[in-house]
Structure formats: C-alpha cells, structure tokens
Image (cartoon, rainbow, N blue to C red):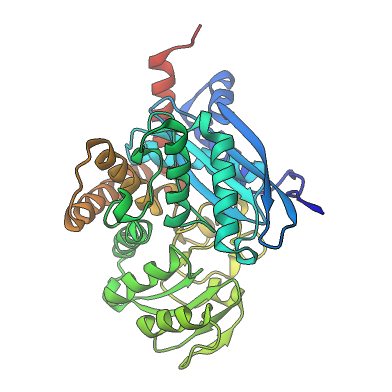
Length: 424
C-alpha cells in the first residue's frame, strides 16, 4: 500500500507573497527597473523530487521534497532543510529569498537557498527519517556541494540529519566532503557554538534594540513564542542576562509566571515531558496570549505568519525581535509601525545561524577548527556591526528597520548582478 503526502496548493497569500511585497518596496525605493526586480524576485533554480519510504512495518509511503536556489551571484547557495507537514514549494521559495537577503546583509559570501520535505518527523522512527534523508540527498546531490549549495538544519531536522546528508553525498563522491553541509556534530566537522548560534544572535540584537528604546535589559521582561531550536536558547540567554521571561509557548500550549519563569527548570521539564505544558510554578495560557503579553520584548521564534492584521494591534511589547523567518505579515508591520513598536526583522535578528554556518564551512574547508570563544566573539562582532548598519540606514532613510535591512541587502545582491553582467 502506498500513501501520497502532497502539500496543499499555493495561495495568493502567505510567506512568498510577504517576501515579494518586501522586495517590491525595496526595489522601488532603490529605483531599480522592472527587469532587475524580476531577476531578484525569481529563483535561479529549483527542483521537486519524490521520496519513497519503506517504513519499518514494510509498507511504502511517498513524500515530496523541494530544493530552491534563489540566488548565487555572491557565492554558493546556503540554506536550511526543514521537515514539516506544512512544507510547500511557495514556502521554500520565500525562505530561500529571505536567505539571500540575510547572507548579503551580514556580508556572508553566499546566496540564498532552502529545502523541505512534506513530512511530520514526530510520526516516524529515526531509521525511517534516515532513509528519507538519504533518498532526498541522493535526488538533489547534483545541485549541492561545498561550492554549489550547502544545506543546514531547520525545523524538524538536526545535526543527525546533517550527518546522514553529508555521508550520503560523500559516498557518492567517493571521499568525505565535510563542507557539503553545516550544523553537523562536532566529531564530524561541526563548529563549536553552531547549535546555539541563531539564539545568541537573536539575543545580541534584542539587547541592543532594548537599549535603543531606553530599556535596560537587566530589568526588562520578555515573552518567547516557540521553545524549539531558537526559542529555547533565546529564553535561556535572556534569563542569564537578567531579563525576566514571563511567558513561553510551544506547539502544545503556553505557560506564564508574573515573577518570571525559571528557565533552567523549564528546560528540564521539557526534556522530561516533551512540552512546556504542565510546568510547575506557572499558569497555563493560550498561545495567542504569549504574543499579546504585557512585556518589553517579544521574540516570535516558531513559524512564519503569526503576527497578522487581526492580532498585531493587540501586541503590547515595545520591541519585537524576529527569531523565526517571516513571523510578521506586511499588514501587521504597518500596524506595529503605527503603534511605535520596534520590529527587528528576521534577516537581521536570526542571522546568527548562517554566520556560524559560514564559520563552520570555512573551518571544514581548511580542516582547522576554532575555539568556542573565537566563534562566539566573531558572531557577536558580526551581529552588532549589522545592527549598527541597519539602525543607521533606518535613521538616514527614515524607514522601518525591515525596509532599511532589505534595501541594504537587495542593493548588495543587485550590485553583484550588475558587476558580473549577463551571460551570454
């Protein structure tokens, strides 16, 4: 028996529409013509593959996977691989585009890419996920490589996934290729500091953003939506810095404590139960209540499109730092701007992961690994320099941070296009 897991059909709204709206605004402000706009809006290459899986019980299921390379004018493509039942080609296209801007903004010599498989990894064994990963890798292997496209972990994937991907690619090449992926285990060429890099970057920028609004981080309050790869460590680092994290949520529920959650104890609870739900010393609240909590700082760190036109007006946080990709729709952006909320965009706020992925790629290519302190110092330097650059541009142009960041990034990519010229 064969089951087909097919993503839902694309719609006129969603992450891709949001990404294109942001690009259109930037190219208009920069005065680019329609031809250049279309080049920047259109992926350079994309592939959709079928992935048959022989399950542990002997049945067969079929999944759909994608890899989109949005741009590689500034270097090889770079982007995560996510496993989620909600993956669609349009979502992957949007995430690849945002990755292009993120790399350009942080002056990392990459273009943007993204991959995804429409699967819910919670319902499959480790052996089944390994078979899915190896088949997906073999299908896209002609498009990837240290000089072509370097995948990394994302939602639903982790360092084990990257180890399987690296091994599959290496077997096909006939030798070990450590640089084909980042986010690997340390023992297989991974970089120290990579697992928490995105969260550290979020917190570096969040603290700077709070100070820009006259809020001392050590006395501030925060809410974190999402308690996965990004949100968990962001909550930890905020708490370590003296910020009281009052509310957190995951896909199962949300908890709140007016005096601040005990984050180390919450992490132990999540490790034991798999969810923040039922944490002692907290009260249960709705997931939407986390987004609307009365705090100084909100970190949406789950999925895209959670701050929308219908709820943005109820957001009370003075500073919103996007740990996730695309959590704020253009309509919500306008509402938050009118309410004098400071929104630090994803292409700046969550770029710590791609920065340390770049560090990992450099280390793998040199076969020389840095200390954790070296990695974290260089990460902080890059993140804060980018914050200063975007903040200055926003002031100079009198535009929101997102517009300033997108314009800076788009301009750098456009310059690469123009300098390279067109072939033939």
